[in-house]
Amino acid sequence: MNTVYVDASMSDDDRRRKLFGGQIFLFTPRASTNALCDHTAEVVESAFPGMDPRYAQFDMPVERYVDIVAPLKPRFIHNATTQRLLRDVIEDLGCDLATTYQDVPRLRMVTSDAYLTSGVGYAHHLHRDTWYSAPMAQLNWWMPVYEIDTECSMAFHPRYWSEGVANGSADFNYYDWNANGRRQAASQVTADTRRQPKPEQPMGTDPQVRFVVPRGGVVLFSGAQMHSTVPNTSGFTRYSIDFRTVNVADLASGAAAPNVDSHCTGTSLRDFRRSSDFAAMPDDLVAKYDSGVHPDHGVTVFSPG
Ligand SMILES: [Fe+2]
Image 1 (cartoon, protein in one colour):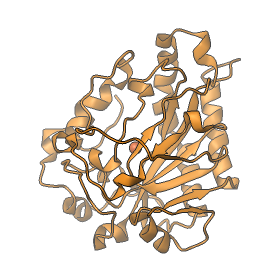
Image 2 (spheres, protein in one colour; image 1 turned 90 degrees about the horizontal axis):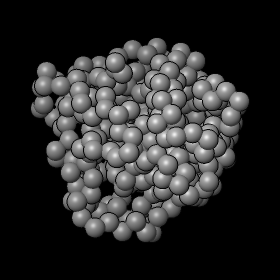
Image 3 (cartoon, rainbow, N blue to C red; image 1 turned 135 degrees about the vertical axis):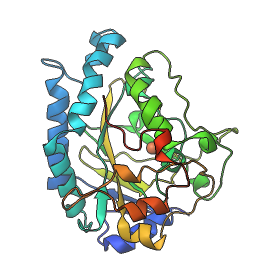
């Protein structure tokens, strides 16, 4: 059974335990999340002078849209203000900055009417982040930058929380992906040919649950949740940000979501920085999760070239 908590006031330790049990937490907008949202909207809007970014797709060919949004993603990620505002959000929502590690936030645009569904606008099929070498203790934070509706939200597929499925994660190595897959994102305009772990059996997309939170609202969930991008039929582009956290106490103790079907190699743990001072993840903790693959075979941490 999955339970959804709204604006729950409980310690982060208790909350993580529930998240590892499959529960989902929603937060309504507050000053810290609105600040991150405002900043993100400013970055997006600066790329579309005189236009509403939600409707810009209707005024330009898809190649032009990709030219505009592809550089926007790294510009948003590698931005000191972005990192600081993100830290404010997780502190405001009760995380201990000394034990919480955060990765960089991703900015996503999901265009309407299948205008762009590949590469930089990739519409994620049903997946768990843990198929992509995320630690089982990873938590995902998701926030829409403008108001959304069900036709452009994200879907959860709760039956698969405890039900493993046949999938391609055994062929996924995080260091290969950093070396090859990621770099190709902007070149995937009409189709996405990058090899990604997918379900390898018929999937029941229903029952599914979608959360429509207001602009600046947050959906917090385990990286082991089966989720997908809803094919956008809303008539406007959905912009959202998402980022991930792990707590080193969980990495040390092994507290995490149950692993029902993730078989990938490598780990994304090196992408996480301590929230208090952006220090690197301790090597001994990374080693514990490195599943025996030598980092020399690929790139351990991705940096856009
Ligand atoms: Fe995901």
